[in-house]
Structures are given as structure tokens and as C-alpha cells.
Amino acid sequence: MSDMSDTPHRIAIAGCTGRMGHMLIEAVLATDDCTLAGALDRADSPAIGQDATAFLGRVSGVAVSADLRSGLQGAHCLIDFTRPEGTMAHLAACRELGVKLVIGTTGFSEAQKAEIAAASKDIAIMMAPNMSVGVNVVLKLLETAAKALNQGYDIEIVEAHHRHKVDAPSGTALKMGEVVAAAIGRDLKACAVYGREGVTGERDPSTIGFATVRGGDVVGDHTVMFMGTGERIEITHKSSSRATYAQGSLRAARFLAGRSNGLFGMDDVLGLG
Image 1 (cartoon, rainbow, N blue to C red):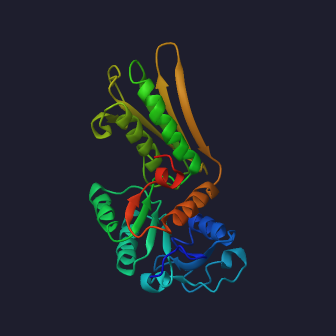
Image 2: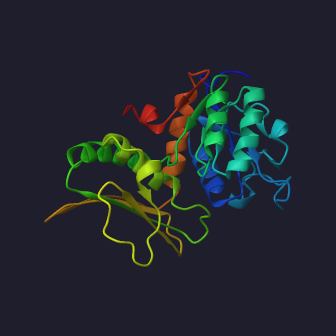
Image 3: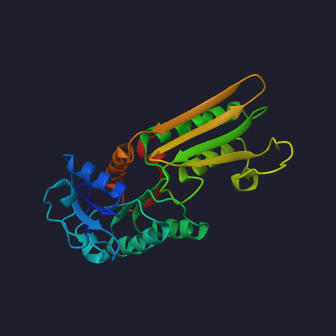
């Protein structure tokens, strides 16, 4: 497989008929340095065989395909915002074909994460629970805030998403919790509280609480609260469009262009490490 350092960057899109898939296709078409090389969807999709840009009234010459080999033929990089089981199948195909992979899917098990890490020995992978540039800047701010507010402040994370989202809390909320916990020397698995009901007793100060809201067409809102005596610090990010995730994904694909293998995050892409 040729390297993506030559232009244009040849991008394949997984889940190409979904909301995020359409946004990614539009983003690719709007660039000067990227071209649509493949469009993947499930075998039961009514769009199979149709032109991937038909929804825009355009002709790209790229047909929606359920066949991974043909869909990835000639692609330098696959951008994947699907479900864990789909992403794992795509991962195996990319590893076999030498295609780089940008993963925006959330909800992976620890075993699946380990499999992704193992595949990164052979191909370059960028995986992040949120591709938004703004969210990743917020993660850096949270790290700084948590270190300074590590005593006397209760930490709560509230997130809201559209009614169609299937996992909770969001991958972004969990990432925020991981960043905060690591900054103050805690293990999120040991201190996270994901639900409160009934007589819960006084709040354990060592915990990090999560609250999830689902409804309407909310693209994604996240707030981390550091609540002390006499003051409350809130760090919030609100997404009004999925376009920010698409733009971040293309930045990630460009970042992977010069790399043959390795597992990277958005902090690497944005130089925040």
C-alpha cells in the first residue's frame, strides 16, 4: 500500500450512510488535499451499490460497499465512527491490507482496546473518543485544573447527547474522567460513580460522579465541575455540529500520513502532548 505522504490523501469512510459518515464525506470533498477512495456500510444497507455522494446530488464514482477488501482498495486511511464490533472487523482488514486507521468509535472493551494496540505494531492508528479540536484542548485544561484543585473539591461530570446515542456515559465523558483521575493520582475504575438513587448517604470525597442526559438532537455537551466550599469551577465544551469531529478526523489522517505504525491520540495530532 502506498504511503499517504503523496497527495491527495486517499480516504475511505466507514458507516458512510450515517450522520457522521455523511459529514465526513462532505469534509473530504471540501478539501484540496483529500479524495474519497472508499465508502463502507453494512451489508443490509439499502445504499449498497449506490454512489457514495448521491445524498449530495453528486457523482463521485465511489460506490457504497459492504466488501472490506474492495472498499479499502487503493485507500491510504480509513476513518471509522461506527460500533465496536464493526470497527474490530475493519481493524483486521486494515491490518492485513496496510491501511492506516482513524478510530472515533467509542464503547470498546479492554480486550478490544488491547487488540487495537496490538494492531498498531503493524499499521498507524489514531484513536480518540472525541476528534474535536476544542474537546482535546479542554482535556488539557482539565489536567491543569485537576492538579491545582486536588484537595477540597468534589468532581462531577455531566454530559448530554441526542436520543440516538447507544452508549453511556459518552466516551468523551469517560476520557475526561480518566484525565482528571490520572492528574490527581486516582484510578477511575475504582472511584467512578455512574448512578445515584435512593438513600445514597453522604458523598464520598474520593469519588468522581457521572450524570448522563439523553434527548432531542443534542450533538454533545460536556461539563466537568470542581465544587468546593464557596466556589465552583466549571469547564464546559458544547458541540453544535458534527463538522468539528470531521475536521479533527482529517487532521488525524494527515498526521498519520508520515507514520508507518504506532498508536496515537489527538494530543499527538494537535501537539498537546
